[in-house]
Image 1 (cartoon, rainbow over the protein chains, first blue to last red):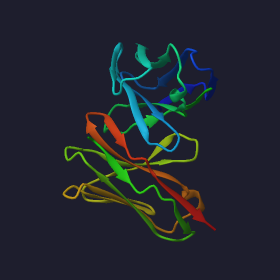
Image 2 (cartoon, rainbow over the protein chains, first blue to last red):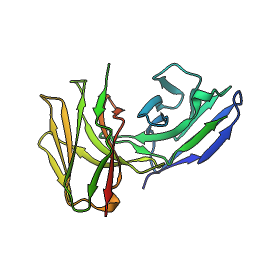
Image 3 (cartoon, rainbow over the protein chains, first blue to last red):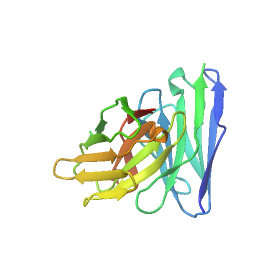
Image 4 (cartoon, rainbow over the protein chains, first blue to last red):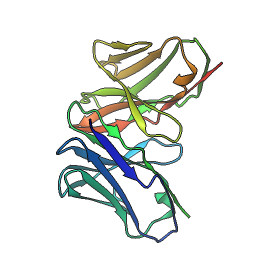
Length: 111
Length: 109
């Protein structure tokens, strides 16, 4: 069966520090991969999606970037975090039927 | 602009009650529709897909009205464990979803 892993679960970072969140999927090949952010009291906002290695589409301009160095690995990064980057970051994957499955998420607090 | 609108609630209902949530979407080209459930501080999980003919899964019934761009979720015989936020989700391009902000349900003993 397919599983999706995200880490870390919780992260507290100072403003201006770098960020790297990793997501990996097991049990499938060539999945579509997604990064979302959910700010407090707001809905899920799609940040990036990828349909293959090295293929990244950005949905909103921002302080973040994404990379897909391997088929089942998706990384979210920032060179310098802002206070507004705080939120709940979720990785998701899908293949057929548009159903997306989410990782457990990373709760990021930028102080 | 592509949007999905939901009443944020909260809906506070007693155990055993029937409760209905509604959702409207703006993109008439949307093809797939879902309800996800999100528990506090957890990731969203698929509750059920929504089909044009309507579909039922146990105590849960979902309906879709394409003409009115309207989706509903009915929960019968509410349980304490149904307490969560329910997210209405539609597609706007192949594989990409738009999520509503969610409707919070609290089932009380």
